[in-house]
Image (tube, rainbow, N blue to C red; front, side, top):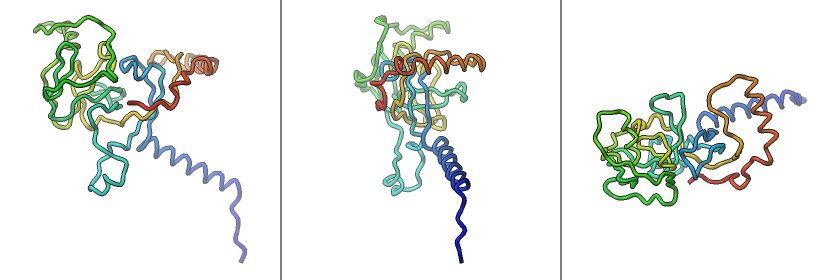
Length: 236
């Protein structure tokens, strides 16, 4: 009995469907692309860096064997993490994890302490302001800027994390709006897959025409504005 061969069109459609399902699965559960929108993580991550985020790495596991066999682990101090902004979960932020649940965090004249021990942050922290705002009790909300250099001490609640930007003098982070619930964590930054120096457009939507003009500008400057030395740069 002759076997009926599937048409090339059907095979191509099946392959396309499988590829689309795999891409959807990967985007939903494994990998997410993320664009750096601000300078809060300079000099490690620059405006215009496009990175890949591992969404699977912090997945919960039921047994020790699963943890041994699967590429998963716990969120650790020093991890660069993408998470939902607690005050607006529709927005994603990227910062460095400084303190874990139960940790006691404090900043004294820009030096970060966790559980009373000063952190060795020389490999990534970046200061742009030589001034140090002193600690001062005040009833005025305007004085909240003093939290930048002197904060705490504060004990991180269970199920929450404390994040700071590497560009410590210019970062909107846990010093100002609090800790991040574990359920808001999306994944750990992996690598920069493309970095475009001309990518300084504002975040707000400005219409389809502006979007088309932006895409044209990117196409024109792709070669000259791409930071080729940052391609496939691991995020640390």
